[in-house]
Image 1: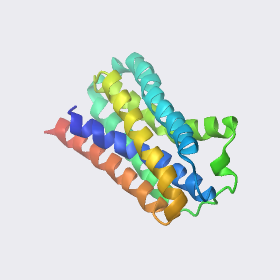
Image 2: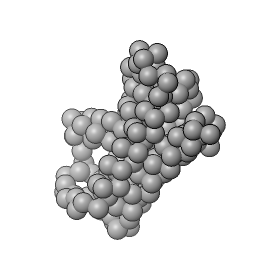
Image 3: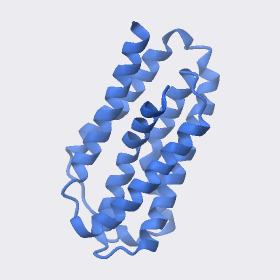
Image 4: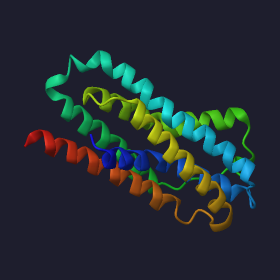
Length: 185
C-alpha cells in the first residue's frame, strides 16, 4: 500500500475527530491553544493506537481469510465509510460543556472517534501491511486536523461539520473500492 493511500486513509479516519474538535471549539467561544492541544493530543494518540490493536488482532485472522482478504478490507472500509456518510446527515446536539471536557469525557470521545481505526488496522493486517508507519501517520494527521478543528470551530461554528464527516466516509469507501479493483484485476 503506497503512502498516498495511507495518507488518504489517515484523512478519512480523522474526520470524526475533526468534527468533534470543531464542535468542541464551537462550544467554547474562544478555545485557547492549550485546550485545543489537549483535544488534539488525545484524538491523535487514540487514532494511532487503535489501528495497532486492530492490526494485532488481524494477525491471528490473516491465515484464515488470506483468500478473501481484499473482500474483507473492502467490506470493512465501505462499512466504516458508509456509516460516516449516514451519520453526517443526522442532526447532532452540541454539548455546551464539550469545550471544557473532563478527562473522562475526553477519553470517551477519543475512543468513540477512533473505533473505525481499529477496523482499518484489522484490514491492514489482512493486506499484510506493516502497521507502525500507517499508525503514526494516522495519529499525526488526526492531531493536526483536530488542533485546527478546535481552533477554527471556535470561530467559524459547525456549519461544515456534517460535510467533513461525509467527505471522510467517501474517501474510505473509495479506498475500499480501489483495493477490491486492484485485487480483482
